[in-house]
Amino acid sequence: MAILLGSIADDYTGASDLANTLTKNGLRTVQTVGIPDPSLALPDVDAVVVSLKIRSVPASDAVTAATSAERWLRQRGASHVLYKICSTFDSTDAGNIGPVTKALSDAAGGGIVLVTPAFPETGRTVYLGHLFVGGQPLNESPLKDHPLNPMHDANLVRVLTRQSHGAVGLIDLTAIAAGPGVVKARLEALSAAGVTAVIADAIFERDLETLGEIALETAVSTGASGLGLGLARALVHSGRISSGGAASGDVIRPVGGLSAIVAGSCSKATLRQLEVAERSMPVLRLDPERLLAGPDEIAAAISWAGDRIAAGPVVIAASAAPETVTRLQSLYGREASGHAIETATSIITAELVARGVRRLVVAGGETSGAAVDRLAIPAFLIGPEIAAGVPVLRTVGNAQGDMLLALKSGNFGGEDFFAAALAMMH
Ligand code: ADP
Image (tube, rainbow, N blue to C red; front, side, top):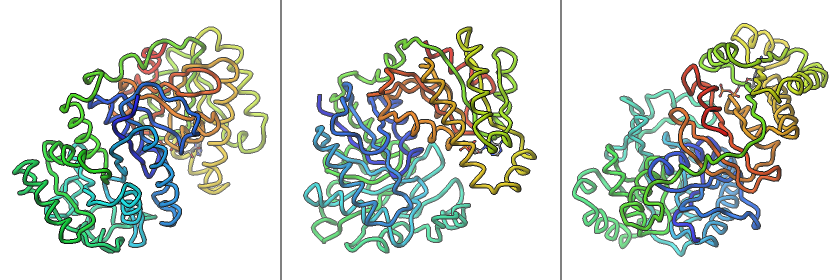
């Protein structure tokens, strides 16, 4: 079956957030890791989110990757493609939102593109073209000090103009509140005047629903998960979604096999979740210095797991309290120690899977990314949420057979998250 909505996300966590939002709003959704192999067999889905890592790369590289993802999505029937950006519009004057938006529009034969990073649920709103992060304009929010993309201007019409060759316009809240007919007429007038992209205001979800309805009549839009929500609701409303909004239930049908938890997040929430898990499951605390010293600690961890895992889930954690982390970082450097531990936890994860683990929880954003890369999982179907923002995932096209996963960023989930996750995976 042809997909209805395609999306290209400029980073992995943004892709996950969008895929989860689309699922919660009624679309059966697959998220891929990178541009999928042409042979990837897709299950019957409404939407595909291709995750790329192009937020901070040179604009020409971002354009090349995004346009090849676009071809893949169009070949599978996507009539609309959303370029998923960060809800804080992370970018520099050299790109990448302007150049990628233009390239995707050109590839689809041109036409004006709606652009809005609004996502009211997370406090991102746009009024008269100005982006607010909670109660602050973007340029007064913590984003002004972002290490890669510091944002010094809240006026997105100006920001996007600096990244674009064509003229950038504005569709303001008054037009949006007046409904799709007025927005459509405004877009047509701006397009006739030579405008190639418009920043659209949005404060409430209903604004994004209006924008979603209009965007679906065009080939390309650019926005954050909020615009995804608008597009998903517009598709469901149009009656084009076969599942009628019950998108995620069968994603968690049983896979069997063994289960394990691997943690590399040192966030407060994860440390507490590990303490709670210790009451009901065997937990191995890795020695980070020994992990960095050589392969013995990895081998010992795998052997420890091998002795226990047939009896029930095991937990292996590199996670440590802030004092320990700081000490290790002062000895080996922040990046080097983090990266080395990610490599170690990903090797342990792959060894566990090789020994029959099919239900897997990974705690930590970077830790999860390294594990998924090493397992070479091409794509996931998004299931129901375990905790806000953390759905159960089912692998698609995985060489080891179907697996159920939960990939948790540091601070997500309640203190019984690990047991709650495993309770949803059979
Ligand atoms: P979070 O989602 O909580 O930010 P991440 O996995 O993204 O978690 O980041 C945690 C980082 O800390 C990873 O690079 C991981 O390898 C590293 N790490 C894990 N355990 C330790 C430790 N004991 N000492 C130092 N760094 C660690």
